[in-house]
Length: 106
Ligand code: SF4
Ligand code: SF4
Image (cartoon, rainbow, N blue to C red; front, side):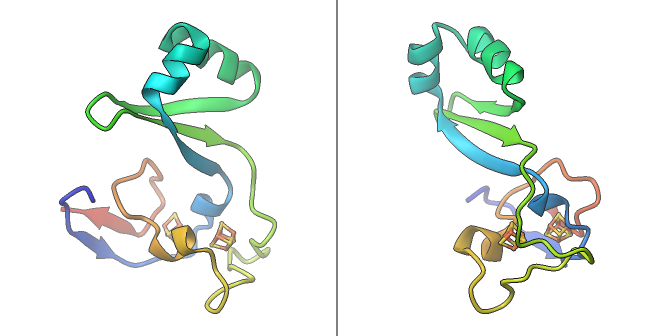
């Protein structure tokens, strides 16, 4: 998706399971809130952070501190490997801002 090659492996830091990340449509968000700045303020009041904005992809990255209840105390996925959601199985598909992640992109 990013055109970059993924290297490394999961080191079970668990960070990608502690926050929920979703992608919003930039033009829809601006239409709803009047401006990106207004959306950013409103989301912040609700504990939602805008992490990335891509005008090229018309996309906004949104992050919420909502841990997954399938994450075990030793940072394992209780659903792995048979019924893990597809998005978890593929993670990460592009560079993220999790410093402890064992994956990198070149
Ligand atoms: S389902 Fe498993 S891999 Fe996906 S977020 Fe939850 S604990 Fe993490
Ligand atoms: S952030 Fe990376 S290393 Fe940590 S659990 Fe998720 S995939 Fe594994």
